[in-house]
Length: 265
Ligand SMILES: Cc1cc2nc3c(=O)[nH]c(=O)nc-3n(C[C@H](O)[C@H](O)[C@H](O)COP(=O)(O)OP(=O)(O)OC[C@H]3O[C@@H](n4cnc5c(N)ncnc54)[C@H](O)[C@@H]3O)c2cc1C
Image 1: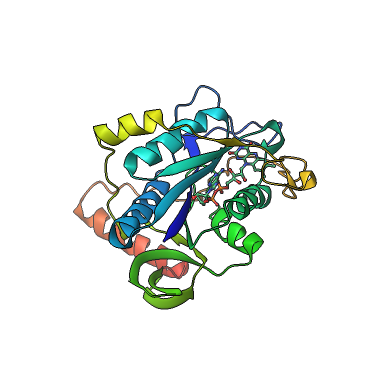
Image 2: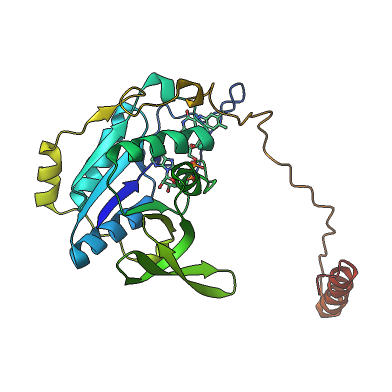
């Protein structure tokens, strides 16, 4: 099975800062890592290869330092990887990002399965996976927590939903986005780390993927960030400070009345 795993390099922080003028993320001075949820996508690709054979290729759109993310993916078991890096790609929204990734996958050509993370911890939209599948006009399924069966021209998968799970059969080639319940990502071995260091990672630009330049980067992104702000939390609460046992009971009664008034209980 030929598998492509799109991986995103993200800042290693939960404290992501936004540029209030451009509305884009401030990445300078923040250590980059593989999007933690993409480790599960890599692991699933490698597990499938170990189960039925084939090859797994990591693909990332980002700055030159995203080569490190691809090398880490190879150290985890991917066979090789491709970096999509060019000034023309910068500032892409999910629409333009998924366009570039889909053009690269078209160029790769021969694939059966694309596995994405559920979402990236910085952009956090979960749109890129379905976006890639839409550009490629292939079926996709999101929130997959188990690949149940591999059939000749399809996969049977388990999809997490709020109150349980669904079992779906999906024709290949297809795209899955996976959740962290699907597996336990392995740590790269020393041998594979050494191997990854020796592997040359090709860097592709717009011409390599025959991209329509009007779909690229900030200019090609239909999303407009109108305003960035931190939501204000307004609490018109009332503080109850009982001083003895009787007052505690009265305070509990008041609390119950308050919650009933709001139809919370
Ligand atoms: C106007 C504008 C400008 C922006 N400029 C930038 C920018 O310069 N740099 C930037 O990083 N973000 C930028 N963004 C945010 C951008 O939309 C997202 O970072 C990017 O498109 C991915 O979306 P996401 O993070 O929500 O990924 P999600 O959709 O949450 O990611 C889901 C999965 O898709 C795959 N994936 C996502 N992104 C990539 C990628 N780049 N390469 C390979 N696989 C990927 C991974 O498998 C990931 O787990 C910008 C957004 C807007 C609106």
